[in-house]
Length: 368
Image (cartoon, rainbow, N blue to C red; front, top):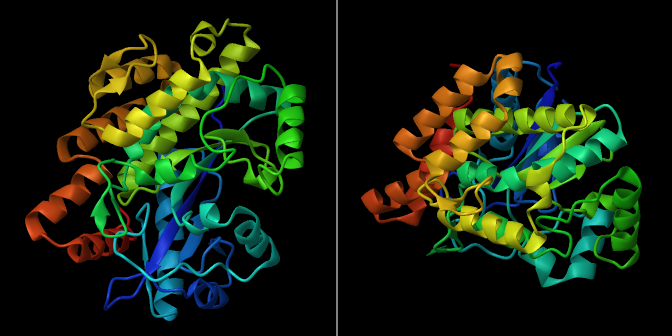
């Protein structure tokens, strides 16, 4: 079993340092940064950073920190703060679509669906050898992805209100016609046929708008796991990314060994959608849907099942101890949504929630 490299993309929101409300200055931030780590997104209140491919947890941590520092410094030059939060917390003016032809077409074609899509995720790219392996991975990791969503959930507040969900971002994103879980494909030909038909029907302008929870990447030889909220704490991001890599590795190795995939075959898409909803609704406090037993279970039981499933891959990569420590740490202090609600309870102010998010994001620039 070889150690596959992983890269992480993090989307962030730009806020005014004084008002803590969103500010549409991504174009200025990107203009003041020369490196590849900082990119624009659909809205001018949003910015993205990415890590180089990493082989170890230490490399991944360092890459995330470096990317956040780059995007934070670029935002500062533009008079803003880059904040790792899943959705806008405060009531803000209308979003400003980035003035690029593709983004403007998305807004024109999808209307308010696009208008309400200002949300920030963490996307994880894991190496695969070819398209057949990639699609086998996509099929096999499906039952486990709600657990990653629950761990990463970091968006309970949206436009001035508590949504009652741990991850409101996940609810926003599954509104897209290609969003959320999908049926198993069984092979690369069916995956490509499905993708082409979705684009032909207008469900996406192109294959870049296939917003599945996990997909075959178009520009890289990777599988892209897209289910997670952007995490404010780097430790949370590293935990979710290491588990995602272990899931991809386990799925690929099992497929190449000819191991039957009885678990994925027992998961209908409608049941999987409900499991995703529950993960986004409750987050780590749970209970979650147990990926193997298909019944409600405490979060620890669901994560223990995942850790057992990917144990060999974690051990081979040298990640087992780190993953377990980071999970215990998360349960002790709460994931992002738990901590956001704790700040609101102690301060009584959503403005204080944004302030805390901004401070924690900037504190994450410093290495361990």
